[in-house]
Amino acid sequence: MALRLMITTPLNVVLNEGDVRHVRAEDASGSFGILPGHGDMLTALAPSVVFWRDARQRERFVAVRGGLLRVSGGDTVEVATREAAPGDDLVALEQAVVARYREAAEAEQAARSQAARLQTAAIHQIIRFLRGHRGGPQEAPQLHPESIEGKGAA
Image 1 (cartoon, one colour):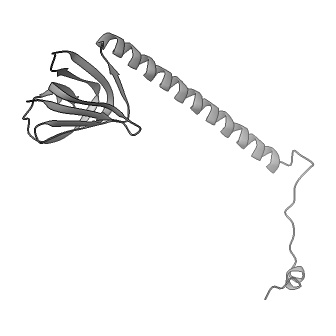
Image 2 (cartoon, one colour):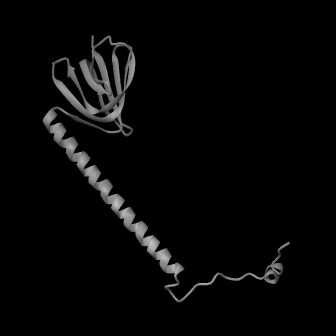
Image 3 (cartoon, rainbow, N blue to C red):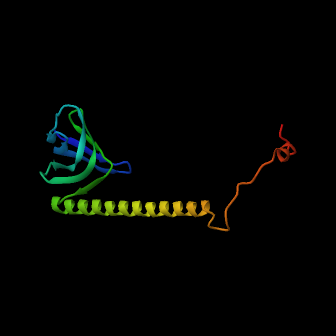
């Protein structure tokens, strides 16, 4: 008896493999294993590595950024995650994931810095306008009741 393991992200199917003999994953309570015939369950995964053993006893890995794991029918394991990175070598996978997270954090920090600069520039522009920096003080146009009456106001 074997399991079918499917791992998906919002954009694609990362893995769809049958003939899986064993799956290990991690949730808030710790690491756990799934064998064929496992009872139905649903759990929220921690950011971790899901690994499994296939029929040839090869261990394979997918790093997941959290997600949901569902076991159904004793033969199907489905993982839905925001981000997944498959790999056959755990050390290389760890290095790739760390590098990817570092790049994402740096890009996020750069975007926040740029947004702060834009916000500061906009505030400075508004202050210059309000102080009348360009062409002296600005006055709001005055509306007189007689000018409104002649324009079709009822």
